[in-house]
Image (cartoon, rainbow, N blue to C red; front, side):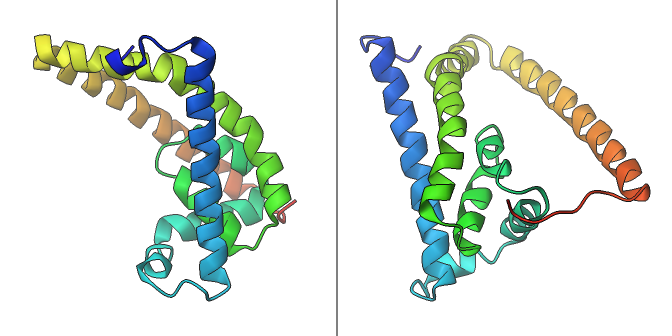
Length: 168
């Protein structure tokens, strides 16, 4: 656990991460809503015209709102999904209700395991950067193999008439 969190009670740590997750998801949702309404014609509108956001929009249109809580468990797609809900003008209450389960899980993961892993990685890097590099390489290899397996499975699913749907 990082030094700045060591004296905090567990509930306070959890609430800190929960409120952070909810605030971030809401901010990105409303940013997307502002761009969709034409109110934000700044660099934010340019940033949301990005392939990742287009992919998130397509994913939401295909799979529906269960993508919102699932997005809390992703890296790199999270911001795009929350922004896409705003671009699609999904209502605040609906978005918030779908966000809460994901934020609860995200706070538990980062408030406990995540911060401990990051602190551990920093400690390992101080002692042996080579050991940290080897661990990162091993985890990256596992992630790459997983992505290849999932893509191969998706490819065979599309060939047999993949699933389509609307935002629910």
